[in-house]
Amino acid sequence: MSAVVSLRDVHKSFGAVEVLKGVTFDVGPGEVTAVIGASGSGKSTALRCVNALETINSGEITVCGHKIHDPALDRRALRRDVGIVFQSYNLFPHLTVEQNIMLAPRSVKKLSKSDARALAHEVLEKVGLADKAESYPEQLSGGQAQRVAIARSLAMKPKLMLFDEVTSALDPQLTGEVLRVMEDLARGGMSMVLVTHEMAFARRVANKVVFMHKGKVQEEGPGAMLENPQSQELRAFLSNGL
Amino acid sequence: MSYTFDFSFLWTYWPQFLAGAWLTLQLSAISTVFGCILGTLCAIGRADGPRWLKWVIASYVEIIRNTPFLIQIFLIYFGFAMAGLKVSANFAAVAALVINIGAYTCEIVRAGLQSIHRSQVEAATCLGLSQVQTYWHVIVRPAIERVYPALTSQYVLLMLASSITSQISAEELTAIANRIQSETFRALETYIVAGVIYILLSFIVRAAFFLFGQLIFPRRRKLGTTI
Ligand SMILES: Nc1ncnc2c1ncn2[C@@H]1O[C@H](COP(=O)(O)OP(=O)(O)OP(=O)(O)O)[C@@H](O)[C@H]1O
Ligand SMILES: [Mg+2]
Image (tube, rainbow over all chains, first blue to last red; front, side):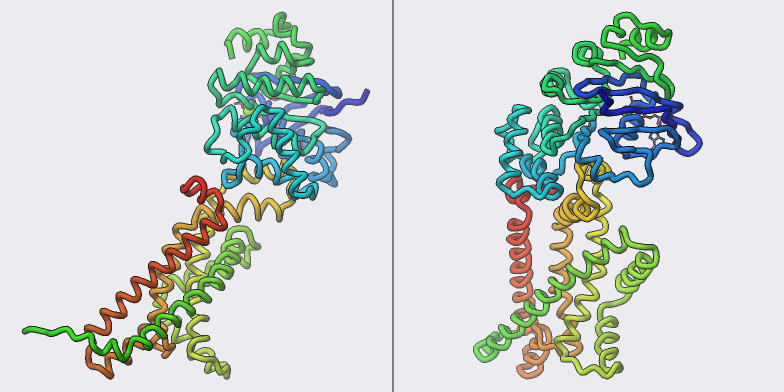
């Protein structure tokens, strides 16, 4: 089976600073890959490269058949296949929850208003927020806002979902409700890459854990790897309780 | 020294006051519509246009904001005449008002555009929206919603500034007042009446902006706050 995401020796620099120093890993279809590592190790940068939000200096990235390193990459086609959720939700403040979700299906897929609305309610149901359709983002708790952001991505029916520390800004009890939604998604067979500090979640849900250290993949393996770290660096990282 | 106020001339002159007020409102309304369009386009051009366009718009804005409105009106009025174009005083007045308010609108809207965070644009891009769709839905619309209170104040000022177009004999409220006081010799009373009418007009402009805002910004209507 061909991988949904594959990175091959990816290098990325910001100015003179090399942030990714040859990153290689794969995500199989229906798999959940958790990317962990210390702050500044390049996790977000790697994720952003996967979605072509950053251009890489060398190496190859293939995502759902799209060649990210190809200068002729069709970004809009890529983004029909890939959803991404950020730590800061990035909901549109002037639109209701429902309108936030309907915007892309309406503008990109040209869905009719009623179809888009039905779709919005379907994905809101999935994240347990059907009753918030008419609310505005500022009326939501952080956990609700993040679930809306997930629903908004799901409405585009992506083949792959990327999550960048989506629970880092949340209180523990709000974290739980967001993680539950993500776990449901994983069980539903969604291919996912998530950057996370939630080690327990990574261990339980991820098929694969990728530990990044100073711009490289230091160690990679199944969730159980976290119980039995091989490298000095991963051991140090885990014992810091991060 | 005692002065006895005498407003009895109003019995004869109120239709003229009314006509002047009506013209003031009309001049303001037309200038508001075209000023908003001009100003918004200029804001977009100055924020995200090519370098030469930014430069042109910046020059326009700075020239307008650093010269008196009266001078602008005269230049436009006599400019038309020099160019051999026969235009009415009202047309020249609207042109001057639009050019003036366009520059102020540009700066207000530009501040709104710049207040939209990059992450909003990124979110829209990641959802697959095209550049134009992103620009409209995620930048321009919320930007205008955000600066709407500032725009309202500016457009009340525009209505009041239309008073100056009396200088090129547009027959708006101030011009009418000038004429009435020269006929009645009741200067104080005439300008008091004009002043009161201007206050009413300000109220009307504010109310119109408020209602329009309720109509086009559902979020404002529901939450009553500015984003
Ligand atoms: N746009 C940018 N311009 C310059 N440097 C950047 C940029 N984005 C990231 N960096 C740098 O790249 C390095 C890696 O950043 P990245 O955000 O990928 O780390 P991270 O592993 O996600 O960390 P965290 O856990 O804190 O989110 C950091 O040193 C950061 O300062
Ligand atoms: Mg990060």
